[in-house]
Length: 239
Length: 160
Image 1: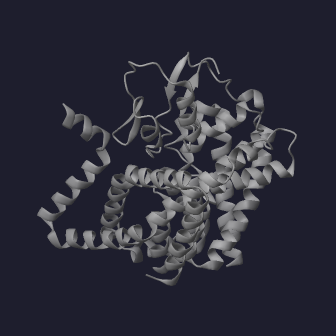
Image 2: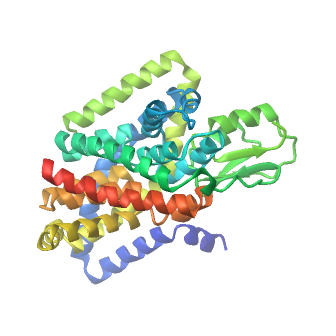
Image 3: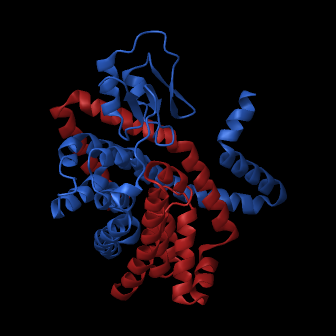
């Protein structure tokens, strides 16, 4: 059972593995060439991945997000737009990791325009990624694409705010009292399991709730919720 | 290791050292987070890399470049952008991949369109986005991002 469940969760990996085994049986030279091609990217990954992840985590922890969030309201004009750009550029994780954070910001009063800016900046103009782009595609390519992308984001976020009104966004539904985890946003960074091992554990590279048999320590839990880089953990109850 | 990669390692090391001097606990937390994120993504990244290796053997970059070159620029750009919306490749694999393709002769314009939609538009993540922000927001954001990705690409073709 466990094997089947694991295979289902990693379907893509299984398919790739089967493809390689089949390839090596039918045409070993093509298989060898594929492995050779893959190794170029593995080498690049090993060289760059530690830097990207460490840099991302450091930026995420050192830039005071709470202070930025204060200026993202509907009255914030150009300042809010620029801060949204900054917030997106320094945050950790792929774009879908930004969804719950942005939903929370909207609840706190961030405008539709700023939401679009944060999501788009989060996706394309992250600092460690720019360095990576510089390396493989050159300075002119990186700089021009960055400038054009920033301009484009500022333009289409304005357009998006004209089309989408605040009332079009769903009102946050009550999730019932207690603890909820947004697994699709979880990056698997395991900070929560590290900080509160009695409550959280990692399963299949995602955070899981342990069955609680002790009372939740409120302060400790709030600490974990704030530490989560993508705000994937929520606790609704008496705050 | 080339100069730039070395510079990135050194820069990050200095940042890390500063961080450590200022706040040990926070730095340890950052390192744990980085390690956790890396570990969480490692297997899926490796499988994507082996997938790319397979595709590039069957379809060498030169023949991809030849195919793209035979299409009209607009069509090639729109197709590349469409490819970008359905693929989920982490950006730091996408850059060396696009680097390979550009050096093999794929035009800058389709390459930029692919890179931009790859990260900004997500068909796969659309249900997640809809759940948080509603269909209208998700559709408008992704739609506008797609159109502007093509505009960015075309303008870049004029500049570079």
